Image (tube, rainbow, N blue to C red; front, side):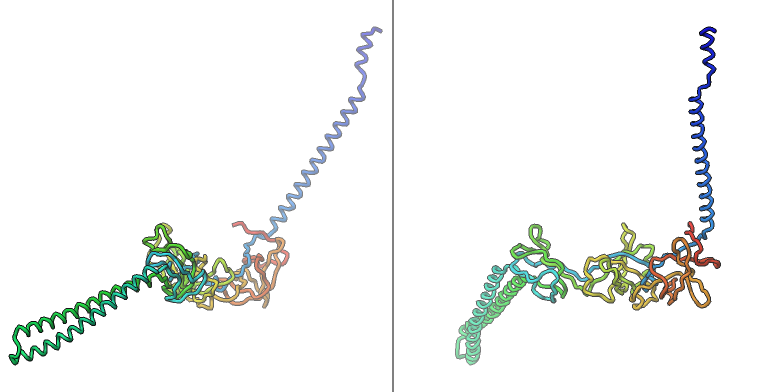
Length: 413
């Protein structure tokens, strides 16, 4: 047999190693496909299971339990604003001078007419002394003129009798009469001069008084704008010097000024009860009332300025504090603006089980029937005396067949 024939026969041998490798690869692919199919089946089963569980949950509307004040139950409108003193003044001097005395600090209580500060007044006092001396000088001249008038009057009366009896010449009488009239005119001139001198003295006194900076009304010092040694001047001449020395406010005139939208202004009436809450003390509510609706609108903001006075106020209320005002129903009284906050729920959340009232509280996506004790009506809600806490969620309009354990989900609006 030839070598060529033997070579051809060798090609007919079975390669055992390749056959084993092929079997191994085929088996691995089978396992992978089997596991993949099993995973798909498991995922599909879980999907259908949870979809069935979700579809079995009852769709409900819920309400988050809150606590509101009596005023909030009677609220008509809310607005934001600031505390503003209706009687406030930046106190400046009436003249220009150096500040030599400042007797108040921020927060001091002052009375009407109290001297708050004083300017240097040496020149004013010198002018006053000169004016008073001029008055005394004119008074002395008046005394001399009055003495001259008295002597001239006596001589005139004597000469008048003598000329009537023709015991003196007419020319002597004429001289006596002229002297009398001249003395009388001198007295009148001296009296007028005294008036002029006195007016000058009064002006000098006013000049001295103008160096005293007094409080125009009783109030509290808000700011101090100058210190001793600085030059102060009236507002009109204060381009290079201090103007207002201090600013004061009458704390009894504090009111909240709030902007109310034009579209809502018809809901606001004079003397309408309000509740005022300062951002600084949000747990304190101050009763108030509408004191004034300013009869003009702000074109840029489309609002109307409304002023709300405090019916009750404490020392913590300060000017320029931000505040929120709740306008109440006209039927609301002052007592409705006070009192602790109450937990409330809508009547639609309450169900009656015999003589017991209850609500369904949502816990872990399940409804739990919870007995409650109901109090008075608060606006459109009912007060809950016990059984609920702020922040819990309750079911609104629960179905008649709802029981504890019923699965619920939030209804999509």
